[in-house]
Image (cartoon, rainbow, N blue to C red; front, side, top):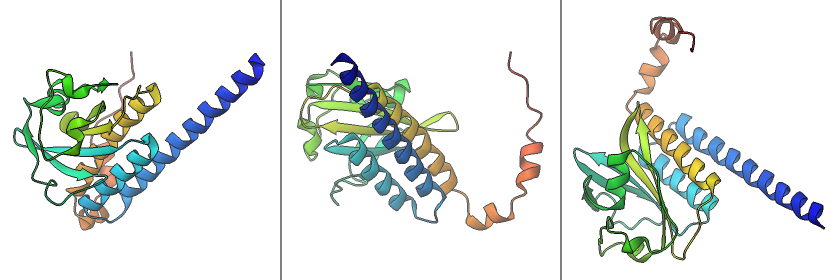
Length: 201
């Protein structure tokens, strides 16, 4: 009986790993297509919400010293681009400042760092998972995943959100490059001129 239980657990973990790999592949495909950045971000938050089975996925990007809501899996026209908070405010601001993931399984709204918005349904959600968006080793935004009910975040979920935060950062860098510039670039010269590979010690 114990062996059967272990076998089922292993099977479920393998299935989840395969789903995680498919998620990363689908996000990567968004990065290489000719799509505007808003479409890319909307596609990514929808994929995250599906994988995490969460009630909300939000992407904030930094504009000067403010975090601006730029994408949501259930977007409302009055909030996209309008909801802003300083990097010194809220759980989201803490993640941006500290460059660290934050996981709160229940009563996130009682955390002393929490900022109440009023116009966001997420203000009353229980569980909160957040990771910084990293581009060229700089924090350029934050991804939040929230559940209405208490939720114990798994290591797989944390790893997934961290990796997607890095993928979104790459998307932002790529979005600044004109397609003609990519086509005309001498990629060999770019690689070789960056210097020799130094052996790791």
